[in-house]
Amino acid sequence: MKKQTEINSVGVYLRKLRKSCKLTIKEAAENAKISSSFLSQIETGVRGTPRHQVLMDLSYAYGVNLQEFLEDIYNLASDVKIFPDMSAPNVEFIVKGYKSLSEKNKESFSKYLRFLMSEEN
Image 1 (cartoon, rainbow, N blue to C red):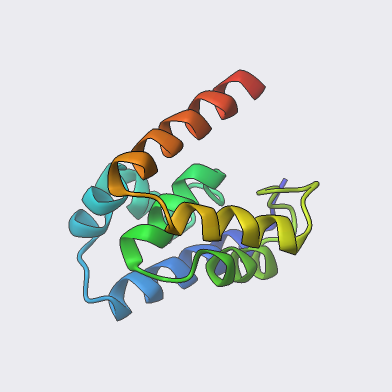
Image 2 (tube, rainbow, N blue to C red; image 1 turned 90 degrees about the vertical axis):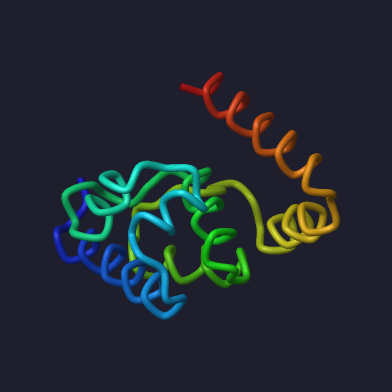
């Protein structure tokens, strides 16, 4: 179980990042394809650190570097398991590949990742 300070740290980080992008919760949630209530719960610590796909979507919605964003989240929440068995070069490879995709293929890739993640649960 996460310590309350870790949950709040991730939430505070996400709120500050959203505000630095001058986005409302509603705008950020729409961009990340999540509900505004879910994002609010993450930011306030009601919910713990979100799953990898949500973090990827938030990174894209905020227009920030995915690898740096995930590293920041890792540093704030010690029990986050985004890519637990992958080294940084592998994550970098995936991020570079994702960035080079067309918007249509990015959507297909995201759907495929969601499918794979649902198979894991």
